[in-house]
Length: 234
Length: 282
Image 1 (cartoon, each protein chain N blue to C red):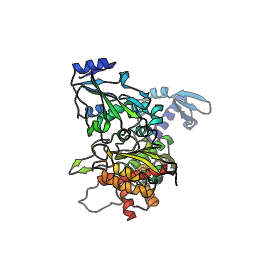
Image 2 (cartoon, rainbow over the protein chains, first blue to last red):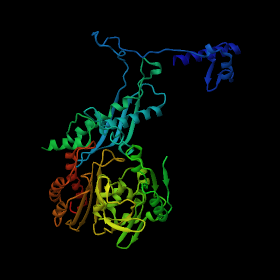
Image 3 (cartoon, one colour):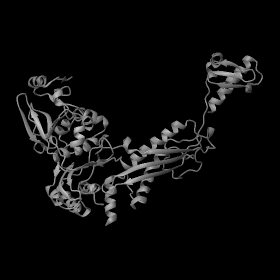
Image 4 (tube, rainbow over the protein chains, first blue to last red):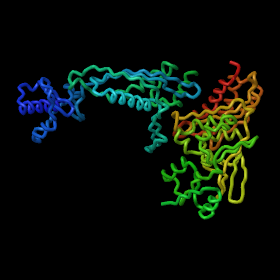
């Protein structure tokens, strides 16, 4: 963002010099052209670019996301990989599920996710990130099980390591809460990963709400759910 | 490099088979090609049966219906004869694999693969399917429960092909049900499956019942005892309770990466209670 802003300023200054326009602020950048607003005249950006040398055409800018100033530990034997970051995204997830009491199968019927995304530039991309995150998170909650026995992987392929398919994923409703992040350019922050954190606890809580069982190991396979239901009956 | 023969009719097929005794026949390839890719199989040559018209389609012969071995699952799903006379088979095919697998895979392939989890097998056992096996000069019929001997093990002789199967129309069973439990809703190998056919009186009395379980042992599991127990009694929770107890003992389930044996045993009984939905007495 910083680099783009500085390059924009440079282009407009250069154009102002060339055309003897007194105030560079009278111009705006449009796709492919520079528009001088008072006279409604347009200049191809390409022409200006040709007049600039390579060094002028390149702008480098650095921005570092803010990190925690407090050290997490004073223990010198612990090596830290990076420093804890400060900006967090938040989300709220709601799952409507159906539990089959004969088989223990859990079906997710409907899903609502709300993410605190900071300022959104491309809503379609954010929605896709959220839907993808929910689908992956539901796999984590209900299907994906990496099994190992005496060091040998029992689930070496996608036949045995089961991920959800289209029929397993419900209709999803997503809402982006655009709370600007004060420390970041344009108020943006990460919104990609937060969506996949919600499904496991949401489905777990839905199971507790629906049948009063609390499972602590994922995935909540039909086998595990049925055995918990049977224990509950005893 | 390996040769793939594509005979256009049975005459050409017999010629290919006599010239290439080690060739491996296939139709949809949904099992065979996967096994070849994983390295489990490396045939010298392949023979694709898809172009042989005599091995395809569903034909009405009055009391009996003939299904060509190379009929795809999708073709079965849209066939009116299957929908009318064999709802139990239709239901099983509708949950087999995925649309892509159903478009390529065939009923004959599902039978000769002889997987304990094959979705068409429990209904075909209940329907007492008779398989037509052919060689160049001969043809024989064999009941499906004698044809399938174990996982991947059938009575198919070398040089013999499965041409199709004969089914007696099952109209007297007014309740036909199939359910499979898998680890997701499509493209799932079943943990267990149940096919059920019942003749129920208007008052909800069970006059006849037949059950078959898939993925419950090396081959399809039947339980004549669980069936006969229900005979003459109303289709009720109490009546099913006893059959379910016996069913759980009848299955020879195993622990594998998909599920534990105990869960499979529980399911074998539990799935019977789904039949309560068909009871006219609520």
